[in-house]
Length: 120
Length: 120
DNA sequence: TCCGGTACCCACCTTTTGGTAAGCATGGCC
DNA sequence: GGCCATGCTTACCAAAAGGTGGGTACCGGA
Image 1: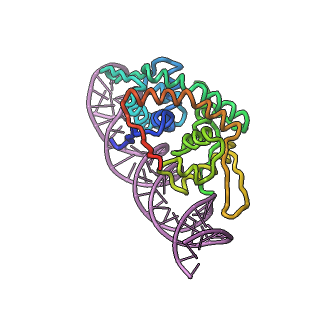
Image 2 (image 1 turned 90 degrees about the horizontal axis):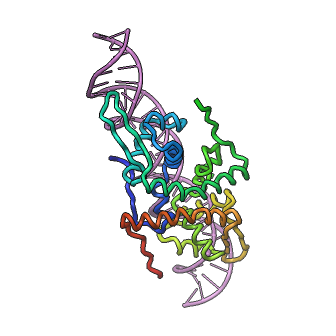
């Protein structure tokens, strides 16, 4: 696999945490899975406006390797795959909460736009 | 300036926060400044093992633009420049605390090495 | 006179990251 | 037999991030 591989050595805890959350879609995936509990590949895809299939699989695989998400494959036709957060994924999401609050404040401060997603 | 420029639109608060902390050295800079209050350029450089001058200035400039650090220039010879956290930088650092804890836990779990810095 | 220390800037290159588009395996439906 | 749907993989590109090594201006000390 031609993806990244760090897992240390790290300067500090933040460094180690950033190593697993950095990636354009990872925090969003964390949110989606936290919100819905269990999601299929196509559901996640629809929930993340703009993500490509390649990126979604790539990020999900990395998060799986990092022990954040659980992947359950059902050998059916057409195939079905369900993703959910592991215990570590859930705790990471909680740890991100205060950062999220700070970000919301920042958005308000600088008056940045938010991506608007039309719920289908 | 050929650096990045986002500042929105953002999907959510985490997205907005990540926009300003992502960068190989930013969280470390945040730590250094939080630890020492005020630091000169060369002090920061010595505190961040492996950082190049170019990267350090680049990251500091971006953090200044994002309102995280304050830059005070003393027109002396040799030049002196002091960096410190703004109010927003300080609050961001606090918001990162729980993430840092999570990361420390992760380091323990996976048994990753930590970067060891020999004080010179 | 040359060297070192300060705090940079600039040009160039490599590595990493993300995006696009195509293909694949399977079986049901018409 | 052709088409659809699902959940991928692969090859190929483009853009962004990061690294290297040089130059600058100034002054003090050896």
